[in-house]
Length: 260
Image (cartoon, rainbow, N blue to C red; front, side, top):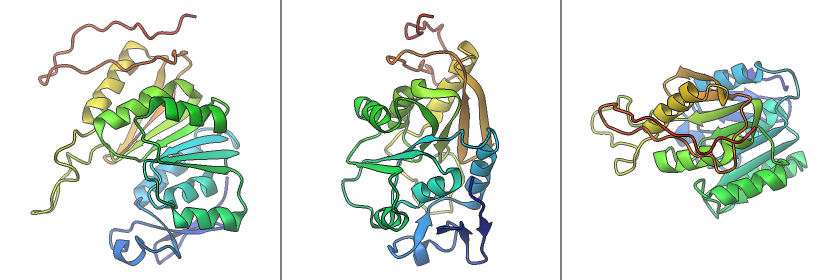
């Protein structure tokens, strides 16, 4: 675990990197620059990752998967904070990410693998990355990609079975459609479905198969994380669907349970 401090100019200072975080007022100053490291995460997110780091002994988080890279600041933060043996990063864009490329050169790092042009809903593609980069075992997953229901759900179904017992699965910004917005500010994506139904489905899974999910934490409105339980899940795993707008849910069958 790397020690860090917070600077007065809104940055996280590690021994080997300075990463500006989103203070709410510095996006215009740092958000599009390639000469600084910037991540679109508020201080509350950073505190939750500190909390996650403290859940396990040192060196637990050796294999990390980040889904949604954007400009690379989040990947740099995860690499510095958790010091994994391998950080596999996936993003739908095919364009280079200059800040992350520069960080990898400066650190001479072989422990970050970047996979561009891979949609988070590509189940087979995600599983290939996990097999090739992470030896089919994941300790920490961070989904900070589309923030849409179908895509986020597909990622969970593809990746969660390969999360180790005690591993952590993070879903960021799941509540974007339900918070208050300043008057006149448009919704993030009014034509797309928010991940809220997924949260209900995860609760159903937790209630129906408690050994699959050990615990669910929602430390604040923008973030949630799950602790993986010991129950094995088949590669064909699918989540139950939350049916009925009024909350009526039919009984569920579980054909995806892995035979013990």
